[in-house]
Amino acid sequence: MEVIPGVHQITAKMANMILIVEDRLTLIDTGFRGSSWQIARYIRCLGRSMEELELIIITHNHSDHVGSLAELKRTAPAKVAAGMADLSGNEQGLPYRRYLLKLLHLPLVSFLWPLDYARPGEVDIPLAGDEVLPPIGGLRVIATPGHTPGSISLYSAERKLLIVGDALNKRFGELRLPPKSIAINLSQAIDSVKRLAQLDFDTLCFGHGQPLVGDAAARLRVWIEKRGL
Image (tube, rainbow, N blue to C red; front, side):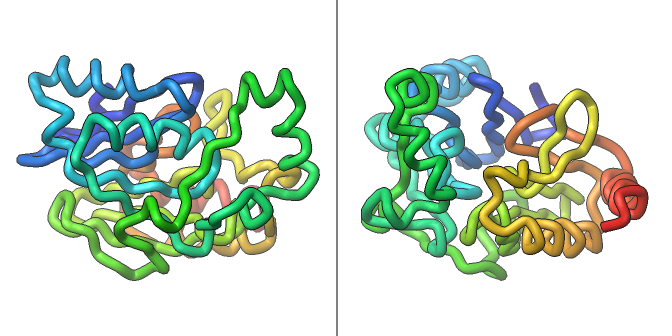
C-alpha cells in the first residue's frame, strides 16, 4: 500500500517494511527470512528494479526486521545502516532477553521464527542517533532504546512522517507499547515514545500494524495521556 506519496508499506508474515520511492529506492527493515521475493515483486510492480535499491535501514536487530537482509544483499547493491548498539558478532550479544534466545532454539519455534541477525561487518553505516540520511529531503535518525538498546526511529520533518519500527505497534486498531516480555527496558521504551510524541508528524508507520494517517502526533499524545505514561 502507498501510505503517502512515495512512501509504501509492504507486509509479509505480519511484519512491515517501508519502501521509499524516489530517483533511488530506500528500504526500511527487511522482514522475516524469505520475504525478499515479496519485496522484489512489489518493486517490479512499481516499474522499478532491485538494482535501484540504494539503502537498507534496519530499525533494530530482531529476526522479523532483519531476516531477509542477506537475501537482499545478494540481489541489490544497497548499503546497510543500523543502530550500532544492537550489533553483535555472536548470539550472546543479541538484543533479546536470555529466555527468548533459548526459546528461539526450540525446533518448532526456530522453524517459525528463525534467528537471523545483522553482524557488525554487514553494516556499512553504524548509527547512534541524530544522523541525517539522504532520503526524502533528510531522514533524521532518532535513538529510541527500550525495545532493544539500539532501536532507532526515522523522522522526516519535510513530509511530517515518523517511522518507529517496534518502539510502538498498532494491534487490533490500538496503539501498544512493545510487549514487556520482549522489551529489554520497558521504562526506557516509554521514555522513547514520550520523546517521539513531541515531534511534528501527521503520519506514523509501525513495524507491525496499519499506519496511523492524519494528525498522528496529536493522537499519540492523547494516547499517552490516557495511559498515564
